[in-house]
Length: 73
Image (cartoon, rainbow, N blue to C red; front, side, top):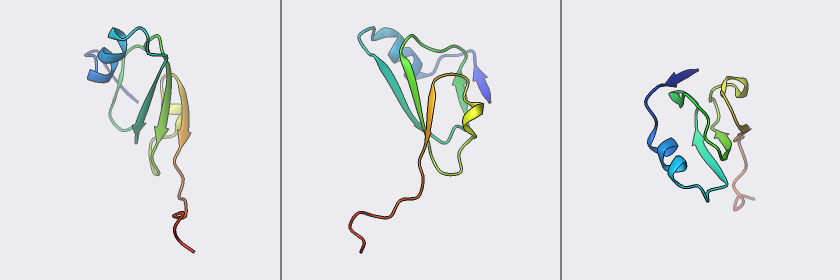
């Protein structure tokens, strides 16, 4: 897990939007996390092969799994 002292654009956006109730990030988890959590609830949606859930510094996680296309027979 990497944290960054410089704020991400998403982190700055959510800090300036007090009416926002939660943040959803679609990510593989490889990169930099904000050094602090924001006030809103955070939900990380992790792609296949992404960082293990326990490595996320705050919030809830869900993992995308392989799914058969709804149009396939």
